[in-house]
Image (cartoon, rainbow over all chains, first blue to last red; front, side, top):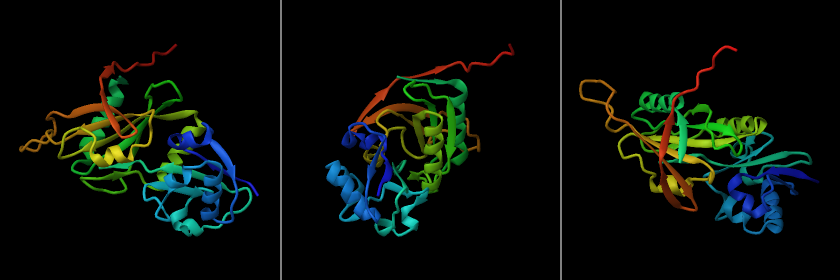
Length: 90
Length: 150
């Protein structure tokens, strides 16, 4: 099972500069664990205290995961996951 | 140094004035690696706030997909401060996530006069924000190229 994950510029230090990597997992939570296993450090940039970070957006097939179950969002072979930091400030 | 053409500069300032007293935000995309801001995209401030801005998450994805398709990147990421100076706030620094971008801050705090005019001075400043470190840079505004018929 392969899911393509689009990595934003700021996190490419964890993926040897790769813009996209393949990962596995039946849920977003499992996918992030798999990403962390292959790209140590990246998990901490996505999660804070076991939750998705407030200013990190993750999309599954163009849906913001916050609307489809968050970390429990179900994933299937061939899904497209995009990680994008929020563009925000004060 | 940020080099930006007059028309784009004016459009960013106009956007900031229009959304005052809420913060305005947007980007100027350009060809990847070119450092040339050419395509201005106004974004909705989903926070709709005088002290905070955030691109709507659905619009953010649409914007990035468009840029990927065009081989573009965000050359300028801008937002306005409506009551404080055009300097990145602690939140701005903490959330800055485009190490290649020029972060432009526009302050509209002095541009609205008591008699209802909005032609007071606007601050327009640019910064690099990398790993929490802010470096101000010079802004050069160039005349807008007009396309002449061949």
